Image (cartoon, rainbow, N blue to C red):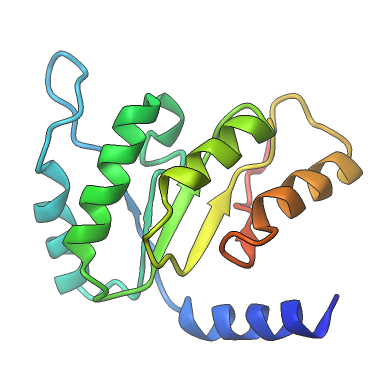
Length: 152
């Protein structure tokens, strides 16, 4: 591990402490993302003592969002957080290309980390493929990518 990566990992470990609750997506009865629906939830979670938030992972229905819904939800959540606690963006898609496209949707946001679900844990790619995937996502974008623990 390079010295720079080790330093980033140490900083991230210090920053991401305690409970990192996943933010669930507010959908209406028709299954559409409710505009403005994230702010109240984020305010409640932060005011309840969360030390960070995770938006767009599997618990947050990140895998069900269209690209436009993902963009909308991430920007809305980022604005609602307003830098109060560390912000972790979840990526759960089926290809490296999709993951990189979604990372590009986050440009301009100061993220603390990405939580990247390896492609695709159901198909169990080998370790080398998973490492390459994580490296491509991390390279020159936001530093370290976190991999969620997904027992299968």
